[in-house]
Every structure is written in structure tokens, then in C-alpha cells.
Image (cartoon, rainbow over all chains, first blue to last red):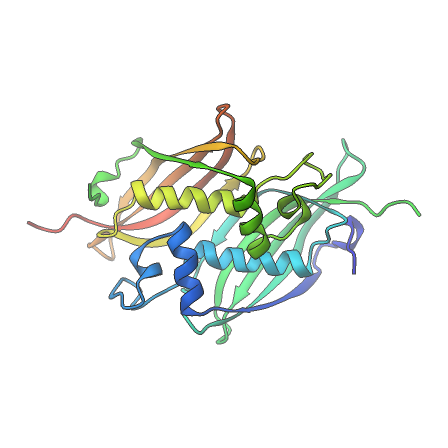
Length: 147
Length: 147
């Protein structure tokens, strides 16, 4: 299903599917991008009592799901920023995450009539229903082409 | 050099070094985490006039440099969130990025006297001096141990 700006109506929530997180993928991501012991050492005796995923790994997993289920390549024009990115609880090896995206704001551009701007609240929960991620993303989306 | 909370003084800026961005690494990251055509297709005729890096790739590169130069494994207790993450200009293959971290706020915890909270403005510029990334990260840092 291709979504255009008109389909991103304030209040609509899309189930973005899930991701399983294992120890190997946590360590692989962290070694490349966030090499702190509590993200890279499976035997760590750290501040979180064991290995946890880099928050940047978690948000990247969420974005992969958002791209695959919420955005459309025909209309997505990229994003300009993010506000209120929070990691309220750690993600551990063996967790199963589930993501959702909710339109919190949508406005057609006045200067560029081929597009609009939307704000999206992306949230992630683990298998216990605990929220492990939330952020608000700003995206530009093409309007539906004239038939 | 190991930094503890006492070393993160408001106003101090640390040069976090740089990263070269090539086409292969842009495509590799995006295929895993942000598979939109303007991040994965080197021949794209997209809204940015060619391939650009995923913003999540850029911020991950920045975090790798921040971890290696600004945080210390002895004192870093992780982060709780990020505000005002912005990508004001695209990152393209062949760009050379440079990152910095500036302490914008530092306060000792009242409830947990072994640590403090710091806010850090992380900024990235390209080889033309154009800002391509900015964000404010909230981190918890251990105070210096008693001798």
C-alpha cells in the first residue's frame, strides 16, 4: 500500500511490526558505533547488570520497521529532525520488540504545494509491554499525484 | 585520559575527531536500518539529487567518535535521551565529517551522590564547514572516586 501525505491523518496509528534482539547483533552494532563495555562485553558487570543494546541500535531497528510499514518510497522525502528521543528502559539479549507509529501533526506546505510535513510519534515496547523507546520524527511527504 | 563528572564543566568543548563517509558504507548501513531509495540506490534520481547517508548513520558515526574521545568507560553510565536532533544538510559519498562535543549543563545528582547528569551538544560539520548534524544528549557520569 502506497501512502501519500493525505493518508497521514492526525491520530492514526500504524503497527510497524517487531524485531528480535540477540546478543550477537547487540555486540556487532555497538562495536561499530557505540563501543561502551555495557554494549559490547557479554560478561560485563556494569551499571545495568548485564549487556544492553545501544540506544542507537534500538532506534535504528525501529526506523527499519517504520520505513517498511509506514513510509512509502513513492512519497517519502526524508526527515529534518527528531525531538524527545527517550530510552526509558534497557533492551537486553532475547528481547522481542514491537513498534508503532502515530501521526501527531500533519500540515500541507504553503511554499511547496507538492508536499506536506508530518510529525510521527514512534514508540517501542518489549515482550513485557514495557516502553523501551519513544521519539517524534519530522518527515516530508509528497501529496497524492493528480490522476 | 579518564574523565569523571568533575571534568565535564559547562562551556568546555572537545574535538571528537572525524569520519570519512563513502558510498559503500552509506548503502550498507541503510540496507540494514533505513532502506529508502535515496540511501540505498547509488543511481537514484531522488529528492536530494543523488545518494545521501541515512541520518541515523551520521548520528551513529558521531556517537562512535564521542564514545572514543569524550566519554570514559570508567565513568560513563549511559544516557537517557536526546533532544533537538537535527540534520540541517545532507551527507554525501566522499564527505569528510568532523565532530565536537560541548558541555551545556552539568549537575550532581542529589539522590545518587556517586554520579551527575550532563547535557552535551554534539555537532558535526563537513569538509566545507557546513553543519550536517546537531543534537543534545543527556548522560549520567560517575564522580571521581575518593583517592
